[in-house]
Image 1 (tube, rainbow, N blue to C red):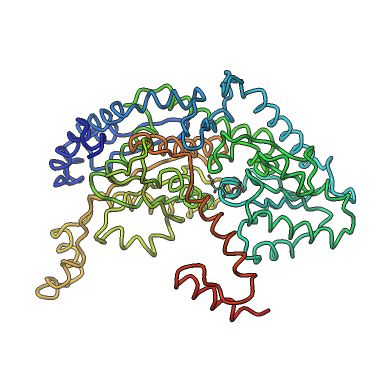
Image 2 (cartoon, rainbow, N blue to C red):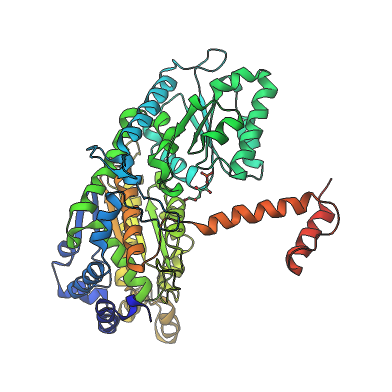
Amino acid sequence: MSKLLTSPAWQALVEHHKQISPLHLRDLFAQDPQRFERFSLESGGLFFDYSKNRITEETMTLLFDLARQTGVTERIQRMFSGEKINITENRAVLHVALRNLDKNPIVVDGEDVMPKVNAVKEKMFQFSDEIRSGERTGYTGKAFTDIVNIGIGGSDLGPVMICNALKNFGHQRLTMHFVSTVDGDQVVSTLKKLNPETTLFIIASKTFTTQETITNARTARKWFLDRVGNESHIAKHFVAVSTNAKAVSEFGIDTNNMFEFWDWVGGRYSLWSAIGLPIAIYLGKHDYQDLLHGAYTMDEHFKNKPLEQNLPVIMGLLGVWYINFFGANTQLISPYNQALQRFPAYLQQLDMESNGKTVDLDGNRVDYHTGPVVWGDAGINGQHAYYQMLHQGSQLVPIDFIASVEHPDIPEPHSTILMANYFAQTEAFMRGKNEAEVRAELDKAGITGTAQDALVPHKIFEGNRPTNSILIQRLTPRRLGALIALYEHKIFVQGTIWNVNSYDQWGVELGKQLAKAIEGDLTTPGLTTSHDASTNGLINYYKRNVPR
Ligand code: G6Q
């Protein structure tokens, strides 16, 4: 058995779980009028209520013991000080340096990285100011109207999520487009709408070797040249964001038009780096800095607060409680705010790519569950679809409910109805509906006797289903920055407890290698025989039937 499972804190939690699992949240609320005050806190403008979780004060004490015993506090310091905690890639993990607003030195390999971080930020701000003001123009002197970000995974999901969430803060003249998939549909349908004179392409790729991105970038360049006919205009319309200057210049983009970042920024943590260029262009310097400021506030909270008052620590521990002790294997993210519709997809990558690991930092296979399946969509739509399973299905699915208090520019009664649903759902998940309540309801509806008896079991809701509620005063760049950093650090806490490397992604690298090999098979005539029978069969079926 692993060190984690035999540790005193884990063993104590195993015992404690036996006492907690029969308890119902309804009763826990009835017994303790202070439960809401006891299990809620505020940080970075985010109000976090975790009282509707299957916990008591003793649970939290034992979970904090687990955090202490697994060295969460020490590891936080190690990350912030630039230590190479990404051991399989021998890299520091320093997305926090990109929002280090107090500008304290952060040293990697003997070099303070802050001067170069700030220099790239200044270059981004100057560039985005010029685009926004219309001072920097396309080749015919017209101001840019459309910005196309070509990137995938970490070079796409953060910027697209933020530009969607903060539409109210975006520049009126600018329309943002994001092209990620390689099926051609996305790039072709995006380009159809555009005028080359007023379109700026940002080619965003950490490695600048990702097949999807480079293929889309080539298609965009061809589209541009076919219409413009002069290579020299490329410089005004194509910029790159990358760590790989050589590949950028080989692609044909002048490295003066490249915005740099570094290997210590993981792809899924890179929206804070130059990968955030589309965000800076769309929001402008002030609001972009506010986004960084929000994340910085959460960083300071995470670094300095004791475990017991530390929001990402609490959130991480609650996740561990359900995954490892209640056997929950998914986590639903339910935003009650249309602007956050892309947030679950963003978190899906952040969490699943970080903690979707089965080998620990010492190279041993783990004997406990690690990262959950993260999923979700706009909560109110979910209510009319998959919430049925959440209320009455056989699996326990912990849910994060996220909403904002103010909804500027939305006429009533929309916000009130939205929020009524938000509160009603968390209450229903907690309380459920017991037999007496169901019978009373049926009596009232005039359904009695055997008809009532037959219906009762179907209308009972067990409840006791855990939820976190996050309330944001208003979805601003600053609050969104804090929200993203909250989840980043929650993932860090869980990765630390599970003793996995949350910062590598060999599964993603595998996909990149495999596709390259099979691309050759698809373009070689004749039967393919080098794979297993199924893969050969599928490839050959495709080759026989694809129109040539
Ligand atoms: C992120 C992942 C992955 C990556 C993409 C794009 O942590 O590694 O999503 O961001 O594969 O990679 P490039 O930015 O190198 O094109």
